[in-house]
Length: 304
Image 1 (tube, rainbow, N blue to C red):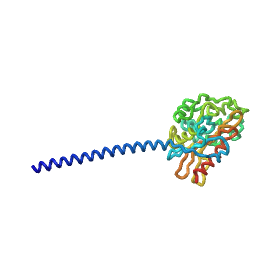
Image 2: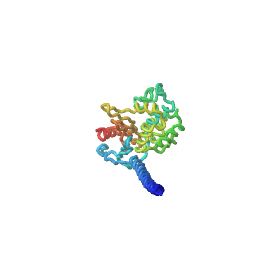
Image 3: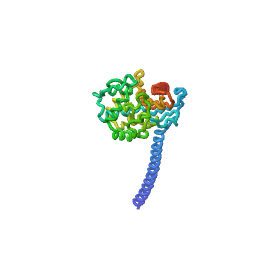
Image 4: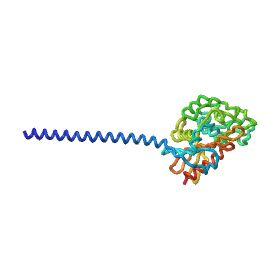
């Protein structure tokens, strides 16, 4: 009898004990699920976080925009939000993509990339010679990358732009607009025109910065080897061995004035990597000015 009573009481205690354990486990699972969900939510919020900056002192009354994206946190630093979302022609900043596509498609052989100059006298003296891809990139020779894109063809170009979500992805005006007065005396030349030069393709500063992240962090569309080759071509400065700035300028001409001035790329400083794009929307400004503004911001805002 006593044995039966003890057994019954033991079973009762065990059932109560298991009941408590099950309740505790259920509560723990609910709490963990909530916290996990909050963590995902917070992570998504962090990735989309924008910090609006006052860079007026760097732009000095020039209408423009700057976007920097932290590679680690995903935080955006934005100056002039409205202009940062406004799409215009990328002009020669598009050579970053042209060069990558040329290498990836095999049209550019990094060991033998010399293309023959056709004898056309261009206003930029450095363009009037046979060129290889690095020199053409550094001197922003339109004719060289016009030839490269024609050899690649629109089908591959469209595929890459769609994959990168490059602005409006519109290459419908493949030959470029004859209204594009890049150099008024020779504006009808196909060799210095294209869909990226004040024509059908449009992109915003925020999209340009995001595209730099997709290529140089996420390794979208292009091989590691070719990304490294273009990265080397993009190197602008190496400050005291601790800060390296990579980028490409771009400028267009509209109504016979320089416009749509760009400097797009990224910088590395200690453990920090930032993808950026600066654009000036002021008539008469150049890619060189955009580059100088970008470097001032980088050194003074992030390089300390």
